Image (tube, rainbow over all chains, first blue to last red; front, side, top):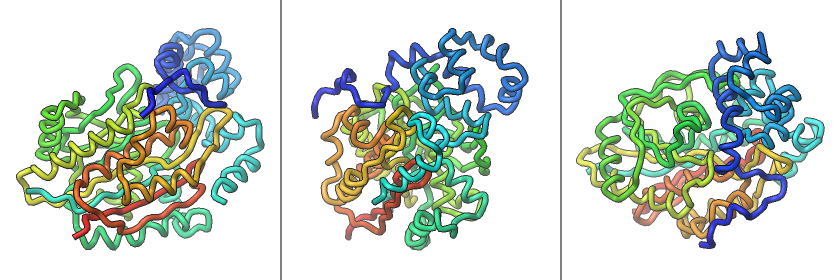
Length: 117
Length: 280
């Protein structure tokens, strides 16, 4: 087995490692809280107050405001916790995939189908 | 001594839970996936396992980044599912098997695996969906369970080689358990998929098919890859194949394939299913 170099870059991929986990802790902690319906309701009622409660930094707050998944990942977000944020707006993983790849949802679904051929 | 009757590896995509709740099993999108389970249902009726050891990864229900164990073993009398945030139905609780939990815990520590033990543990879709697929009908499955959680969320994740050795150690724990129980080992997740980044939607059919074949012909084949190489080959979330590898490694003797199915796509994922039993 080759030595596992985390410096090895894979295009279009951010490995969720210690660097990302440190950067994104507050953001991921807020998103983890969305397992609770009460917390989802509290976020919807006052987004600013909820983000302040979790001490999001400016980059994370902006990415949440923009509902932008690539920005959320750049701010340290992990996709499994971000999915709970997406769930608040009824977004599924095809919506999230389409947004990140700059495609329509239909075009993204066609791409998924094509992977089977 | 207890007996491993076989091993089942399957995808655990959350939207399967939604499809079950809406009775979409015969829908054209879903049937190539659900139909794959029919031969496995027949096999389960024949081999009648008493306990399932379920090797899976938690996605932020029981574990958060505040405490992230590399390997965690459940030691509870009951395991509950709960709200995961994005709306799949919550299923009834699962029975634990405390004797087997502690047999596995004791053996793993003796074999130098520094695991976390959990006397309280919520189980997420990666545990509940495979149970719903194998025992459809909505009621609690008629067997006891031991959940074993592998970190595939935060790097460094355990290597394929390490997961394989974990599986071997779990297998020896089961086979040296003083019980007449019949045990099935489940490995859940995969196969290739990536949810995050500009590479979202990535799948790798040739690799997946080779991996499925390798589980019969050369089960440690995938241990040649580093974790980063696996991300490149199967996508960021495709690394869940580590759970397949660990489950397969619990079977030490010669094996034969009972059934396999592979279908693209289920949601953003290349779905896979495989059942293996000892070859006599």
